[in-house]
Image 1 (cartoon, rainbow, N blue to C red):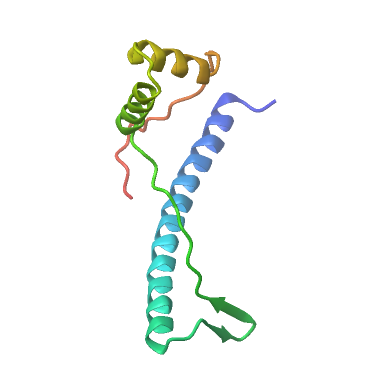
Image 2: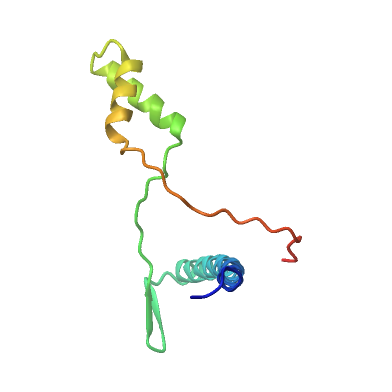
Length: 121
């Protein structure tokens, strides 16, 4: 079996590589979004529904999405809905609903990583 120093060395390398990969993915997603905006602008200027580039076909489509509510907004919406339904003690009802929706608490052992050397990233 490997010594703990070998295990820690490998884990450190993996953590550092994951940080680098996450940063690279973040940059690529940002660039992809910029390019998508340019393609959408082009399609709107030319009034075409899509285009073909080699084997890639791109079609402009519209969809709807809902932005997530903050915790405070969710609580307020729940209180308002319960009041509209005629429930008198909305605070108690909200607490009961939250308790019913939450899972059972369990203890999980995990590691936290802190570096003693300043990062150069």
